[in-house]
Image 1 (tube, rainbow, N blue to C red):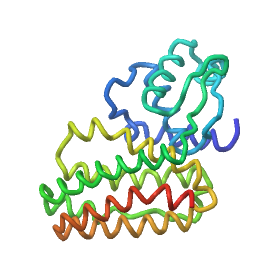
Image 2: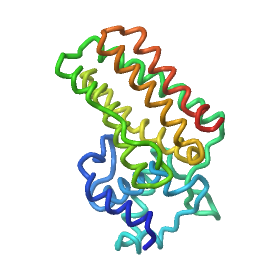
Image 3: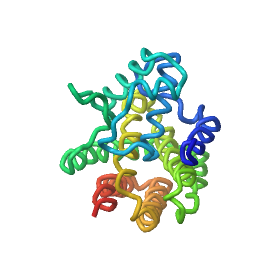
Image 4: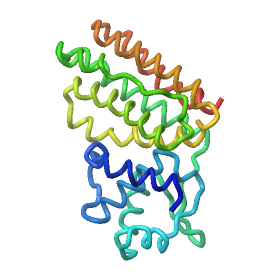
Length: 236
């Protein structure tokens, strides 16, 4: 077993509850577990865009028959991570630059609305919780273990904002977009990881500051700029 895969498995055991599926219509049972683990590996950049995924190899990896693997990959296909092509099989999607920019344009609008709701509905206790969320060191993001810690910090930041927004129905519908955004970004961030991460950390600090101050328009504007600017920062 290679070292990256070992770290992935170790992190998976520690974070099963945190990475539980929020998306609706996710498969249950073994297929659901496989889908969640494969999605997590894609978010961390373990699988690359265009990479082929073998049903048989995955079945061996998870010690199951092909059926739960097929169900898991079917779910990931619906979520936008993989595609199944005739004569080719299953492979990780390879979105165009235009497709990614379109995705982040929509994603930025949704996250900006969440910020507006958070400002309107926040409590002092929630403000303190948001202020307490701090990034881990970003110098080792080429390492998959450090990358997992960093993504966990990003999840905590956005989860707190959505918690402050108090709109669980919307959160359930749109939470999967953040995972897909991480998947897209980690395909191109290896060389730019440190400077990009530091810039994004500062933007999150400013967003939190404006939310706590109750400046709804400024906070939403910063969040929109933060999300929509990610692909340009990473792939520039």
